[in-house]
Length: 186
Ligand code: 3AM
Image: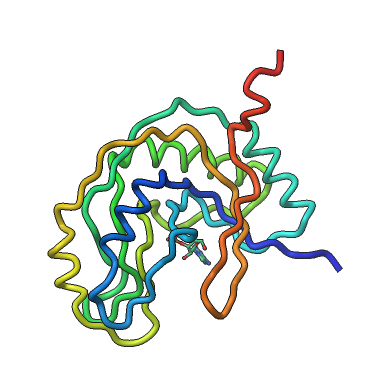
C-alpha cells in the first residue's frame, strides 16, 4: 500500500518573530494556541498525495527561483465570524512579494497536475484555532491591531508534512528551497 503524505508549502519564521507571536497569545477563551513548532506562513496547501507525486512536487519546487524579499508582521485578523471564530491570525506585509512567490508555487503545482487552488491567497500566520464557542476575540483583535515587527528577509520556503494528531497537527519540514547545496551547479 502506498503511504499517503499530507503536504503543504510554507515559510518558516525567524525565532524572534515566533517569540513575538507567542508573547501575544493568551486571554481568549476557547482558543487553542499554536505552539512554536507550529508557527508558519502557508503559501500553498497541497493535501494528501502518494510518494511518487511527492517526488514530483519536490522536483517542481526545486526548480523555483525567486529574489529574496523583506516582510514584517502587521496587524491581526480573524477567519470566521466574531461570534464564531475559526482562527485568529497575524498579518504579514507587504502582500505582493508573498503573493508572487505563492503564484510561482501554484503554477508549478498545476503544471505537474495538481488541481488549481480556488481560494484567494491571504498571507497570514495562524495563532489560534477554535472548536467551540469563544470569547474576547474582539479584545484580542483590538489589542493587536497595531502589531508590527522589524522586517526579516525571506530567502527560502519549505515543504512540510502534516501529521494529524489528537493534540494538534505536527508539522514536519521535509525540504527547503532553494536547496543550499544546489545554489551553484557549475
Ligand atoms: O497555515 P494555516 O494555519 O492557515 O488550516 C491548514 C493550515 O493553514 C491548511 O493548511 C495549513 C497546514 O495544515 N489546510 C488544512 N486543510 C486544508 C484544505 N483542505 C487547508 N487549506 C486548504 N484546504
